[in-house]
Length: 477
Image (cartoon, rainbow, N blue to C red; front, top):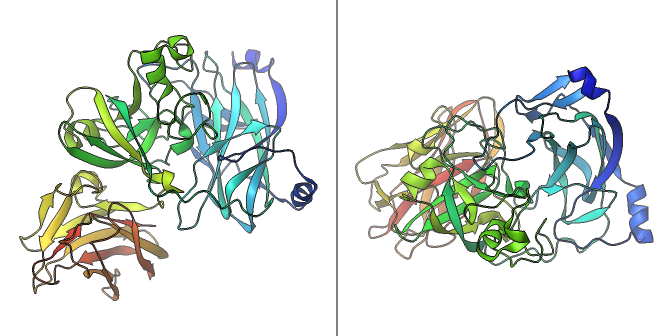
């Protein structure tokens, strides 16, 4: 059967570029000269990572989904993602054009996403290819990453990709401006419980019981499998609980509705107010004839899906309801990618990292907003170390940056000591931070060379009596 439909396929070569909120303009002579000096490279199909439905064949990378629709609302067409390793270029670039050679039948598609690492180690949002344009990104950088999105038709027949080539160049100055938002964007949206234990998310994560992640209806903010590049802070007013977690799935209802972005950037539904999901507008106002992106009538106005652990345990929700969501990467970038070790071991993969407490003074709390995950640990200051120890495992020696997250308040220590110790027992640093400031965000403690094995970061409670230290989470990247 496969041979019969392959005989009808056609091979296409198309170019695409990526935009992130910058208006497209006809290339000026200077831009043309920049393009002539573009850096060019080809991604190796053997090095990327994707789901089991992406198969390497003699003809190329084939997408042939055989699973049922992963989301309860269903999709007419399934999309498989294939992500290449990040690549460092010789010179910074702010403009991209991919050249894709693919074999595809009617109803299938090949889309290409790209992102660039921005200052501070975070990633920009992914941007999807559109054919035949050359568009600047709002930031330049030397580290880029490419992701293929292969779309199958209604019968589950997907395209075959033979080659992925790209070119990038820096088109001008001034593309770094206009990105320094004062705070991440926040909106009130309707949340539904995702469930689907045993299913697979858009980024390849297999959903487990009481899992913790969210789904948003656009892959522009879709993190890698197990990654924390794009995170949200979700708060439920009826229980006064909040949770910070990563975006690991795409949905509900739409797949190209980055409603948190302004109309100049939003991929679809540009006439809607910023912060209003299309499914909400369709459900409440009859927008788009009351239909979603796929011509279906939404059964609810949901703009976010919550995994069971986030829904039931962290937020204490019992029914679908309205929540307040902060999109943490929208202040100018994402969060750095790395291994996160939380203050609650239920949230940790303890083969990679865990927390260990000494003494009896550490208490779990949610009193101050801005904590990572479902809570934080706090201890009063005293002339004793009794640390909270964040252990993290490295399979190979490497140079890593370590970040810390805490909640800020006026009773916090201004010199909370984070002690960095390698797997050999050598103390690398004692970094004192002011926990009255810079709460609800990652703060970089420093960068060190670590050996393979179990390394650790300890937060001591040896600070001025009458003040408190907070152990919330660390990130190793």
